[in-house]
Length: 281
Image (cartoon, rainbow, N blue to C red; front, side, top):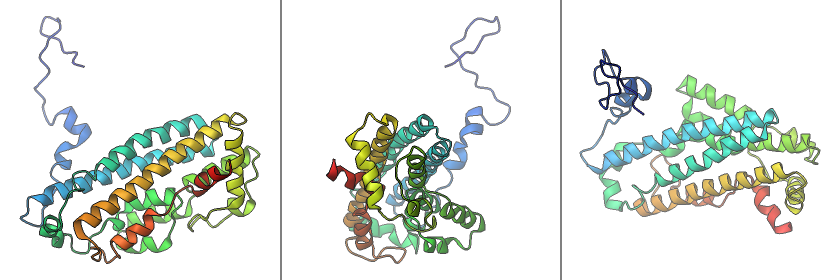
């Protein structure tokens, strides 16, 4: 809200327009940098929306990683309310991220092929920030560091994330500290490997859902994690549908199996026991 004053000290409706250098807005937002990051590689006018949408996705990945890392740290410190706040913010951010598919969702094969060659071997699975999101969800894979060997800083950040507890690992450690029987094999597992479902963890979630008032905050935590998992599932499905419309069953730009690979991803649930426990309540 403007709070400018005129020469007499009275309020003025005219904002300050005279700055010695760049505007304070530009200094904070770096809009000039953001709006000049688009270096098109084809003459097709549709490439701009594809490139900007992808860049917007990268920014949302960055925000969501920040939220989930904030939540993981809060859970380590037994601060469930702080973790819940971060996770709830991430729900709105995931919805905005998922909406990013809308500009691309109606691409025809001809429209996509008009600039597809400009991508070369570029593919979304090479996104380092998206990989950090996946690692925080427990989808660990050391092989996914390989594409980043040529970028030491990025590789080091991913290696650190690979070795650290995922968001779900921190949740399970919290459950154990609250006296719930999370098995030692789960708590002491190799954190650099993909999380695998545990019948004992399923039983823990079942008990929390059977008596939600016993540890109400943990029940609420389970529900917000389920919300996160649902939106991640929707992201994967929207990606699958957009890809299927644009390129059918062709091999992906990065050499992946394209739609077939995305179909396999779309069938997997994150935080798996939160879904399977519902069958036993």
